[in-house]
Image (cartoon, rainbow, N blue to C red):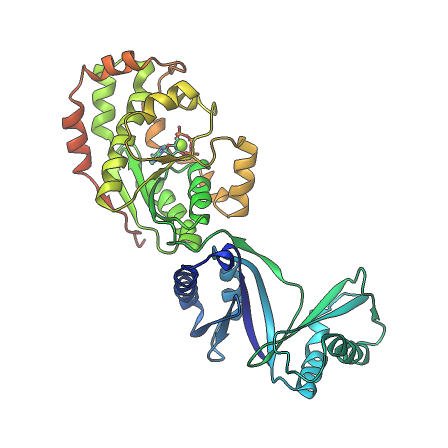
Amino acid sequence: MKEIILLKYGEIALKGANKSTFEATLAKQIKYRMRKYGSFEIKRAQSTVNVIPLNDECDIDGAYEACKKIFGIVRVNRAVACEKTVEDIIKTVKECCGDMLEGCKTFKIEAKRADKRFPLTSPQICDECGGAVLEALPGIKVDVRDPDGVIRVEIRDEEAYIHPNQEKGAGGMPVGTNGKALLLLSGGIDSPVAGHMICKRGVKLEALHFESYPYTSQRALDKVGALAELLSEYNGRTVMHVINVKEIQEVLRDSCDEDYFTLLLRRFMMRLAQRCAQQFGCNALVTGESIGQVASQTMDALCVTDIVCDIPVFRPCIGLDKEEIVEISRRIDTYDTSVLPYEDCCTVFTPRHPRTRPELAKVIAQEERIDVEQLLERAYATMYTYEKQDI
Ligand code: ATP
Ligand code: MG
C-alpha cells in the first residue's frame, strides 16, 4: 500500500496576488523538515500539499508527527493512495478499513470528487465503499449522523486517496513569510512560549541568551541550547547568540543601589539585544514578560525597560496568566526542559527588595554612576554563537 501525507493549508489559501510566494516558502519548510525522515517528494495540489515517500526507507510515522509542527498547515492527514478506478478504490478500502476503523462500532464514508469526470457521483462512491467496509468488517454498522469512525475517499486529478479522520495541524503562517525577530531566550518557561507564539505568525526567530559565566554554568547554557533546539522543530534551525553580562552585573553590584539591580540589568539586556537584532537583520525583539508576574514586570518596570529600545518589542505572553503559559509550554514540549533547576544570570545578585514602581529619573541617576556605553561595548564583544557540546 502506498501511504502519503496530505497537508491542508490555512490562512494562505486566502492570500491574493502573493499567494504563490507563501506556498513556495511553505513547500521549502516542509522539504527542510522532512529531510530527517528520508526522501520525499513535496507536491502542491489544490490548496493541499502532498508529501510522498520516494522509497521504503522513509520513516512515515516520524514525518507525520513532524508535519503537525509546521506552521501554515491546518489539517494533517495520512492517506493511502490508489489508482482512480472503482475497482482499485474498493480493493483499497477493503484492505485498510480494519486499521482505519479499529475499535469502531459504527462508521460512515465521506466522498469528495475534485475530478468531476470520475464515473461515479459522490453518493455512489459512498454506497460502493460503504458496502466494501460492511463486507470486510462483519458486525460494523453505518451511522451517518454520529459515527465512531469516518473514512474519506477523495478523487483527485491524478489518483484517489483513502484516509481516516484528519488531525489538527499547527495553524499559523509559514515561517519566514513575516520577517525575522530576535527572541530573548532565558531558561524559563515563558520565553520559549513567547517565541513559539510569534513564530506561529510566520516570523523566523533567532535567539539571544545572556549568560553570566562563571556565575552561571555550562549546564545552564546547554539547557537553553536544548530549548532553542526544541523551538527548531517549529522554527527550523534556530541560531542562538550568547552574550556574557557578568561584568555588567559586577559593576552594578559595586556601584548601584541593590534594589535597582534587576531593572538596570534588564535595560542593558534590551540595549544589547537591539544591537544584536540590528546586526543579524531582525526587525523586532520578542520577550516572555507578562504584566505583574514578577517585580521587573510591573507595568512601571516594563515602561522603564522598554524605553531604551527603538525597535518593536513583542511580548505575546503579556496578558496570559502563568497557568495559561504553562499549558502552552506543555503542549509544545518545552516545559520539562524549562523546569530543570539550573541557575540563570537573573538569579545571580538578586536584590532582596526589587523596585516595583521605579521612576525613570531615578533609574537614569543610577546609570550616571557607571559608564554605560563602555560596558555595552565590552559585553557586546563577548558575543558568540552557541554550538552544542559533544559530551
Ligand atoms: P522566563 O520564564 O522566560 O525566564 P521570567 O518570568 O523568568 O521569564 P524574567 O527573568 O523577568 O522573567 O525575564 C523576562 C524576559 O526577559 C524573559 O521572558 C526573556 O525573554 C528575557 N530574559 C530574561 N533572562 C534572560 C536571559 N538570561 N537571556 C535572554 N533573555 C532573558
Ligand atoms: Mg527568566
